[in-house]
Every structure is written in C-alpha cells, then in structure tokens.
Length: 384
Image (cartoon, rainbow, N blue to C red; front, side, top):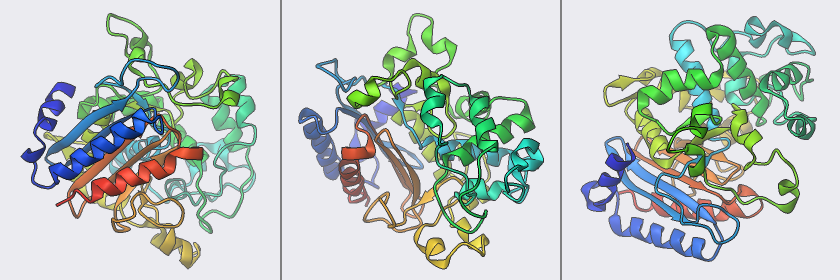
C-alpha cells in the first residue's frame, strides 16, 4: 500500500486541489526544523477524497542521539488521535442496532452505575460531557504496576464524577475507556481486535493496530523496528511506562495507544471524505459521517451556551474551535479532527475536500504545539 501511495506523491501537480509550490515550502520547513532539532522527526500526508497529494517523512527515526533517517514506512504512536478511531468502531455498532446514543453506559456495564453514574449516556462519552476524569488519580501508579486494561475499567467505574452528566464539556480520556468496554461487552471482542477486523483490515490499513500485537515482534520484517522514538524527559525516561516503553506500546490504550502511519491515516481520512466508503468498501454510512462531524452539543440542552458555541464536539471528533489550541487558524469551525499529545494532528475539511495528517516525535507540551499549528496553517494555505 505504501508503494502505491508514494507513486501518487511523486507528482504533486497531479492533484489540482493543492498548490505544489506551497507544499514544497511545507516540506522545506519541516526539513529545516528537523535539522535544527526543533522536531526530531515527522511524517506528513496531505490529500483529498481522490488520493494523496503529498506523503513524506522527515528527520531522524529516534529522538535521541544521531540515528538513522526516518524511514518512509515509519510507524508512529499517535496518542489521542486514537479516540475518534475508537468512536468510529462504536458507531459501527450503532448502525447495526446494537447500541443507541441515549443508552446508559450502565446498561452494558452494570458495575459502572455506582457513585452517581447511573444516568451517563453513550452520547456523553462521545462528546466529553460525562463528568468522568481525563486520567485517573492513580494513573501513574497503575502504569508503574503495569496494570492491564480491566483494571483501568474497574477504576473508572469506581470513580466519582466531576459534574452532572450533560452539564459541562471537559475532556475525558476515561470516557473512551468505557466506549472500548461497551464494544467488548456487545461483541465479545477486545477493542484492538474489533478495530482490526472491522476497520483496519477492510480499509487496507495494514500498519495500524491499537497496541503492538505479537506478530509485529516476529518474522523477517519486525514491525516494531519501524516505530519512531518520541522525545521524552529525563523524568519520563526513569520510568518503565513512558511512550517508548514496551509496556505502553503494547498496552493498547483506547484513549491514546494507536500505532499507525501517515499513509494509513490518509486512508481513514479519505474514507470519511467519501461518506464512509473507500475503494468500494463501506465502513459507515454518509449519515453517520455527518453526525460524527457536526456539533452534537446542540442536543444537550444543559450544556452552557458558550461551551456549545465555543467548544463544539462531534461524536468523537473535535471541531475546529478556537477555545484552546485550534486545529487550524485559517479553516472554519466545521473542519473536524483531533490532536495527539505525542505531537500529532489530523484534520478533515469536507467543504474543500481535503485532509491533513502530521505525525511528529516532539510532544505537544512543552514545545510542540506552535510548530504543528504552523505546518497546519501552511497546508491550509495550499488548498486551491
């Protein structure tokens, strides 16, 4: 698949929707920043529903020392870009009549009902209005102990709420944890396997998995060797659960454990731009794509008006609002996408039939955000 995508990128003028000179400027900027070590390494994909206009990697394979160049087929840990992918898996079950957005979480996970969580609906999980925490208070201890996913689910079930469901917007990774558990309770399949069967395999996303599977460590072409190393602090390096650790890469966190490539994410973006279908394979319907990418806070009457207007969320997808770090300074609010704490950004513009995927190894905090937004803006300026 990568070879096919790269043949498209060899001729930037093939696709009339992007200015090739501006895209070359984007590449030159990323090359310069990587040479200056502002960003250790990156992968970029830009395109439309028809195909990929630009696919390139930059910098070095690992963030530490003088290592080999970033390979063309590098695999990146994309952090929270994982969230809308997992939410798409849930929407497949919505389309099959297995779950509705107004179902309570406790209907599928009865032990979740404790401590005032009886009324949390699936819709609240998808729109970050549940009142659940972003990370558990004992997050560091759980990772230090290498606890498995069921422990995180159990601790989320035992967590109190920060506010009444549907009354505020507050980013909540643990809400996505419960989405993965709902998928398990309905299908009997762990979220990574459901994603592989229902999305990745069907879309030809052959280098994507939620957590490193056993087969990536075996055979002649060991895929784990292709994973790009992220820049971490000395304090993080002293742990054995940081982003580059075997534990975290294998854990498969539904809120942030997706390993993938720019080429694979480009196929996911093209599927969304094509109304849920790619190369004759339908993943979700155009109606579902529309619901996932439009402001769903309008259906929650108790959310404050300023939050509905200034922090709009679709179903798993973040709209391009300006409250906090935007996806892009130039594009309208209806553009949707997601950030990732490892230094990643993806957006989709249905009106201009375009998408942008930037995966870096420079975490968003404390230094990565300005560089990522600048590249995002430069690519938006290339749309014609």
